Each structure stands twice: as C-alpha cells, then as structure tokens.
Length: 231
Image (cartoon, rainbow, N blue to C red; front, side):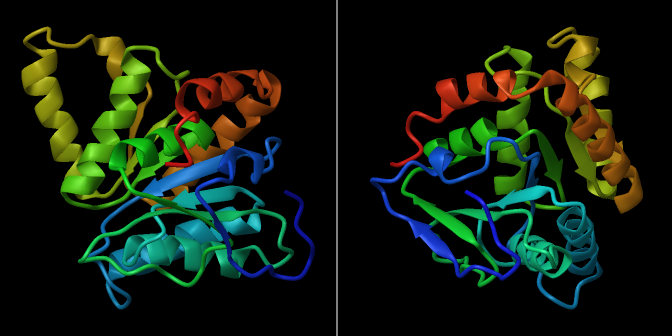
C-alpha cells in the first residue's frame, strides 16, 4: 500500500479485508508492546514517543495494539517523525472497557480475540520491542518468545526496554534456565536495552540483516499466522 507525501486518513480494515494485503511487504516493520495505563506526562510515555519518532524518521513501519497509553505514544511519535509519509502506522485493536483507541493510526484492524490479534502481530513484524507494561505486555512477550523457541516463526529480536525487564530475565536465568527447563540458546534473541539508542541500534542491525534475507521468511510467518487475521 503506497503512501504519498500527504498524510492519509485512518483506514479501518473491515472483517472481510485481509490486512496482509494492505501493508507493503517490502517495508521493515517493528511491533511495540506496552501499557495502556501510562499516560501523557509520564517520562515513559515521552520515551516511547521519542523512540517511535526515530523509527518514523527512518521510514520504518510501526505496529501497536492501537490503544491508549504507550500505544498512543508510539503511534503519535511515529506520525510526527514520518514527515514524508513513507512508513505505515498500524493499530491492531481489541475492545476493552479500560482502554480507549488512539487517533494516530493510519491503518486499523479490529479483533474479537486476543489469539488472532497476537497471531497477526507475529505475522507482520520483523522485530518486537517490549516497553514497560503489565499482564497484557507480559503475555505478548511470552507468546512471541514461545513461537520463536518452538520454531513456529523465524527468529526475530525481542528488545526489552526498561528496568523492570532486567529482573524478569534474571529470574528466568535463576530458575527455569538453571533447572534446565529451557536452553541457553532460547535467550539468544532476547535483548535488554537500557536506553532508546541501544534498542534502535539493535533494530538498525536487524534491518540491515533483513535486506540480505529478503521477504521469504516473513512470508512463512504470514502463511502460518496470518490465516485468521480477519476474525
């Protein structure tokens, strides 16, 4: 889906449309997961805004859950960074009583089930960034990680930003890893970044590698996990 130099209005993909046909398959695409409870004015909101703005400046597509809080910060920052309108800002929304949609989406797809929504995330993303969050964010992290572990999707980086994730990874190493409930190699694609720059450096290296890999591996993810994206 080519974009012009003028910002497009948000397009809501109906349940009969295939979102995989609405995105540009040649674009590098990053998913950002994070809390809907962290609002504008918080330093983490600003951090996510600045992070996504940099991705917009570099013409990298963005995918979020399309809700409020850090999702809004990401889509908002991306819009402000993508001044030439070269990248897509995508929201995969779901109805929650505690979460409002944001107004910075260019392409929106609504889901009734979390499972189908998560499958669509992994089917179109080349990298995943985990910002501070609660139960939902943890679920998204473990879901993507498990699919990589069992080789249901090709290995993509999971970049965890924020102090809270260091302690989670420490716990994983101290208990499940030490008890041989997972392999050391399962942690190879997980990165804990202290700053936006560290996370962006990993994305840059991944994007450079993707140019050599081509589209074939992403297509495999789409075939496996894009089937139910309209439900």
